[in-house]
Image 1 (cartoon, rainbow, N blue to C red):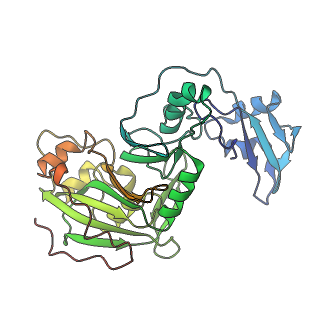
Image 2 (cartoon, one colour):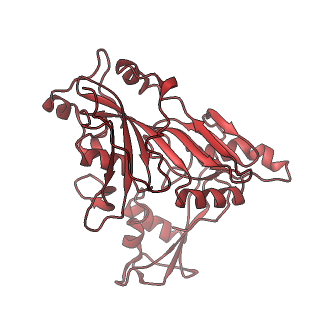
Image 3 (spheres, helix red, strand yellow):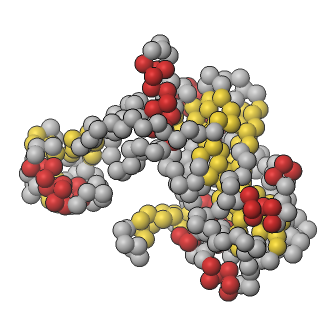
Length: 357
């Protein structure tokens, strides 16, 4: 789907354009239903009958066949523009080029599908709309990286196109060090270890609605590497500091599952209350099983895109992770900074003496 670049994301899009890439021709309504999954076929047919769907610039019928190279435009029903104030995000760092905020769990980072409000990006655009309307310098916040809906913590955004481009270059060249906190099943055998397993995306047909969920794939998956540092363990539960060297979808979750240490609450990758019982582990007293995967974006180190000086930003652990850290006797103020794992020059991960059980 193609949306207007640089548009004000505090307002829903007025239209969406699609380029047909499949060689086999199919009915327009069926083809659109697969791409506008939040709309039923009858609603899509209504949009078509109202003339709100165009094929190669012309009004089309539901039965019209589409094929490779065709362009489909849908005039969306945006409804009213809600003016309720967005959720205020805690600012961790800000300068004229960058903004680092705390993303709460359950929040999307940008509008997608039928979700146009309640995301990090549309909230920031909404907060800055009044200032932009009266300013010569228009600030449009752009994501420098992404976090899953359920992942909490540090999110870095750029205020200018130049800053974002330079930071993306740094991310791709592995000059940005990302560190996450995870609460997992089991106790690792080494205090520092790495997982080098390919990751690929696939459609999970077992769900009510088909869902694209990445998985470990040593044969055809993209090369993926994550380094881990053990922090503490108790009763078969551990706290880990994680540093993804590559940036694949769900990489940390997949790699931890692949070595038998799924993240607590990560039912998408097989972690449940039953799996805890099966391995003889138990939750800390008065703490219930988490409702989401306990993964938190904790730290970013990167060269400032303009000043070129090293920057380090940390985000305090989320409220639902803190009780686990306290029960495991991990002091967030004393967390290591991955010195043993930060080998940006490609040197091997250092092996530890084994985790204390």
